[in-house]
Length: 394
Image (cartoon, rainbow, N blue to C red; front, top):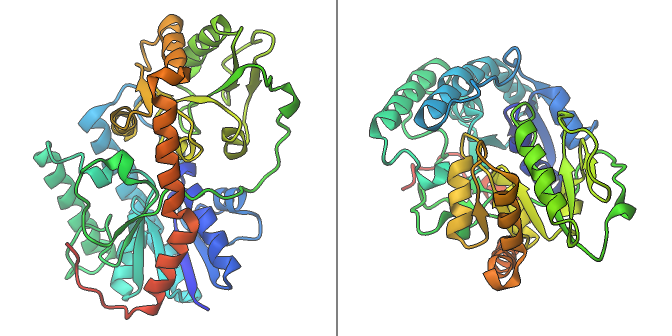
């Protein structure tokens, strides 16, 4: 039996993939603990999860609404991920001291996990919950890349081992990437210990009162969801989506997720919910309209479901481009979308002749074969059995 410590930022999309991995490790008889935002972790991983609370930023992640591209990337690191690392470092250090893990599994954006484990000589693997940074998005922006590496070096001098080298986002001990080669294309990986395990599909904590009986078996079902971090920005897009789905209502039934309460009454036969059991629902839908969030994209493709992607910010434009390049969906503009164009995009991905469904199903088969949580747990067990010293890879 080994001990594994999961270190995560306070972002739902970064915690959810590790919930299935933690459950698989526990099923095999290992001990698992978490370091991060306790209330959120217990909500997602279950109230019985062992959690070492870490300090968190006041107010969470608040981004300027129209910030995009390199400016958005710089903002995320300078204003959120790097301050988060300084805040989390004492809690991660305390968790390692008390829990004594054999392996630390740390989200690549919870950099404190990597740097504190590095300083204490504990084997650590990175968790990559998006394919965007694996594809080296900064290759064409060398000044931004150098800027980030400079900040990471300064951070390492404060909370890590100043003698160490290498990018803490990509542990030399291994990277568990919850994606697949279909999205990455031919892009080279950071090093040869990057393991593409596909999405970690596993039951999630909590109960749902979703009205399954309301789903119409005689119409195609289309799920519209903008994820958990885009509540404030989603009102106009959801309004256009409702109009698009209504125009297709003779053959399409929409399920619209509206956590911000932007929508009033929707047309008869359409389902509007503040929250849905997404993984269960994906097994019953024919297409997904989303923001290009990596988890939603990979979970949809794992189920063989084609996508209409409307990226908003962060890694979403990169992921949306990967979906289109893979032939599994089409892209629309988030800020300027209109009901007629969105309806045409939905009709396109539902059309068998367009090939998007076939591409999604083929990608899904390969993602399922990658192993998900089971494969991730296998890699972690092997890491726990190796000596702690591993030379830098790649």
